[in-house]
Length: 281
Ligand SMILES: Nc1ncnc2c1ncn2[C@@H]1O[C@H](COP(=O)(O)OP(=O)(O)OP(=O)(O)O)[C@@H](O)[C@H]1O
Image (tube, rainbow, N blue to C red; front, side, top):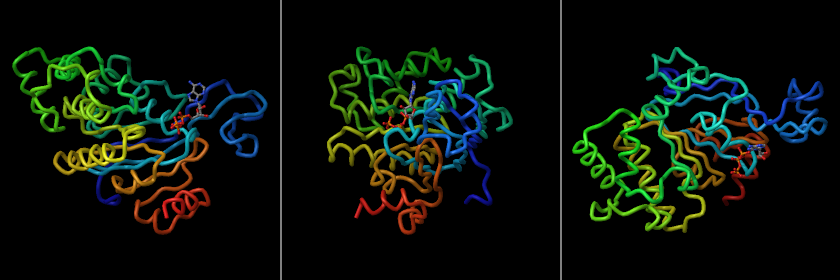
């Protein structure tokens, strides 16, 4: 797949640091850092020059322990946080020629509303809990410029049906729903403007196992039916094994291993990945 197709998303040297750095740490020599943290000035290098590609229709898994920088990377991609430096290109946006991190805030809003969808671990970040469920979807449609109420209602119903929420409950606010249902409403909202790329950040963490399985099945179904590309972050290799075609493994803000998920599971190269894989056995 990699050699023939153009990636839909290309990320190059994404760096996010908290703190200004000092002479001791700014060249990021690993021996000067204590994990992702400079012991001299206290700067945290949450993401240290991360690069990867996502190809059309594939699911890229991002796995790593807590604090490895997965969520920070996703926040940067969705402009929830500003990168310190780095580049990202999306082939369906300006033909993949512009670094999205350098676009104006207006263009970034456009990208958030039309090119990317994001589903958060915490539904409070992705949903207005007091709006109706269909109202949550309408909010995203309006943000992308839609104004026709009938069309929005039709689209909202379709999306909610797609994620197995009965239209009888579409006027109910997500605060009335279980955790699994809230995640499904978030997924419907994220899909509302047909984005070519979906970012999913620990979307099943904290859910009961059976509910988790349900949400994972839904994600697979969506990928199968819509052919949408996804970046799926999880600390749980089981989730990655079920969903991801290819995987990158993060540790202390760096990518330490990448490859086909099957390959990583069968023949992990890095000591940390080996520990992760063996813990599944
Ligand atoms: N706003 C912030 N200010 C300072 N440090 C931060 C901030 N946000 C994250 N960090 C630090 O950046 C590093 C990466 O955090 P991040 O949340 O991205 O990791 P993660 O792999 O997603 O872990 P988790 O799943 O526990 O959130 C951690 O050391 C964290 O303490």
